[in-house]
Structure formats: C-alpha cells, structure tokens
Amino acid sequence: GSSTVMATVNLSGLVPPIGRATVYLGVAFTNLGGVLGDQLLLRPDGAAAAVPPVRVAPGILLTGKTRQTVLLITDISQMIQYSVSSAVDDADVAVAGYYDDL
Image: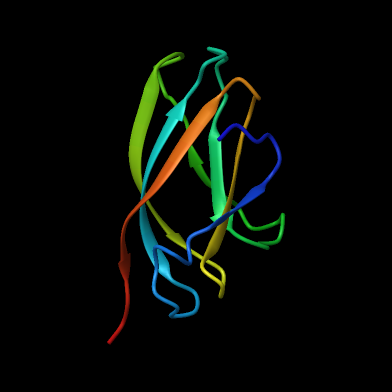
C-alpha cells in the first residue's frame, strides 16, 4: 500500500482469534521517491500517537526494496496500521507466522 496516514489492515483471516496476537510480519518497503528519511511505520490498530511505531527504513538504499521481518502485536481484533512517508512509496506486508502461549 501507499497510504500516508495510518491505514488499518485486518489480519483476522490470517491469525486465529486469540485477542492481541503477536505476529511475525514479512514486510517490504520500496522508497520509490528516493528521499532519504522515507520510511514505513507499523503499529497496533488504535495505538495512541504517543506509542512509538515500528519503523522500517531503507538505510543506504535510497531506491529499491528493503525487506525485514517484524514482530508486532495486533489489537484485540487482530488489526494493525501502517503508513509510508510519501504517496509514491510502497509497502507490502505478509503474515509469516504468529506466537501463542499455550
């Protein structure tokens, strides 16, 4: 996606209904604008603005795709939010797994 405001992503079809799930996300961020400082932000849905989001930044790759595995907690409905710095940037998020205490 390329939302520049926090957009909700529903993971409930990919994660069992266990409340606040801990998910392993395979994320890819493409800094298509090539602007230093552009980044992908991820957080639980509804998290307060004061809660720092997880940041995925391209580092030395001003253009091209940066891939990372991110550990993130969802809200109680298995939803997260994301945003990118610029509308020309792109983010892909895939659930690689989840963690559940038995």
